[in-house]
Length: 265
Image 1 (cartoon, rainbow, N blue to C red):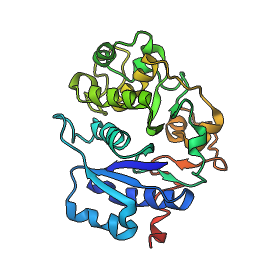
Image 2 (image 1 turned 90 degrees about the vertical axis):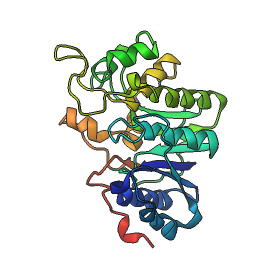
Image 3 (image 1 turned 60 degrees about the horizontal axis):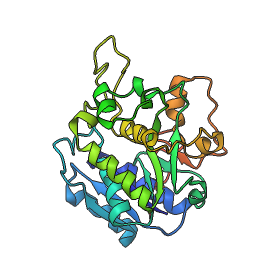
Image 4 (image 1 turned 30 degrees about the horizontal axis):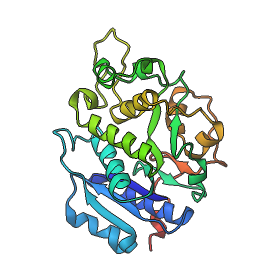
C-alpha cells in the first residue's frame, strides 16, 4: 500500500522519520507528501534522500481554513487527493507517527476495504468532542452517542464506496460549520454543554462512519498495532502499552521520535 501524509514546515523532520520507518518496515511503495505553509526550498531534502519514491504535492486552498493548522482540512485533502487521483491502495498517517514493526500486512487487516481505529465509547464519544453545528450539518441520527475514531491513521483500497466516502469527508471539511472551530477552543457550544472540544476531521470521519454504517469493532490486537495509545494512556493511567505488538508508534512518542533519522542514507 502507498503512504500519504501532510506537513507544514516544522514537521519536515518528523515526516522524514515516518518515511524512512515505512521503507524499513514495509516495501517499495510510493509516499505522497502534501505540504502547506512551507518554503519550497526546504522540500528538496525529500527527493534528495528518497528520489522519485516520494511525490511532493501542495495542499490546494480549497476553502478559507485550508491552511489553518488546527482545523486539519489539509489532512482530509491529502487523503482525498491520494485515493481519488494517485493510488489504488493508501494508508494515511500523521507525519509525527512512525512505523516500528512489520507493516507489510496492513492490507490484510482491512475490513470491507478500509481500516479505522476506534476508541472505546467510555473514552471518546462524539457528543463530547463534536459541536452541535457539525452533528446537525452531517445529519446522522444517533452519531452523538457513538465512539470516535482516530483520524491519525486510516487505510483504504480504491473502491467505489471508498471514493464516495472520502469525497464526502473532503466536501464536508470545506464547510466552516463542520470543520470549525479549530482544536483547542474549550466548550465551543457553551460552558454548560456536552462538547468539551471540537475534533474537526476526526469528528467528521467518526460521524460519516456511523452515517454509512461502516463501524469497526474495538479490536485489542489491531489497536495494539495501529491505535492511538497515547490518547488512551492520557485518559487511563493504568493502560499497559503493548510494545511487542506495535506496528505504528503514534505521534512523537518515546518509541519512535526521530529514531530513524540517524539512518537516513
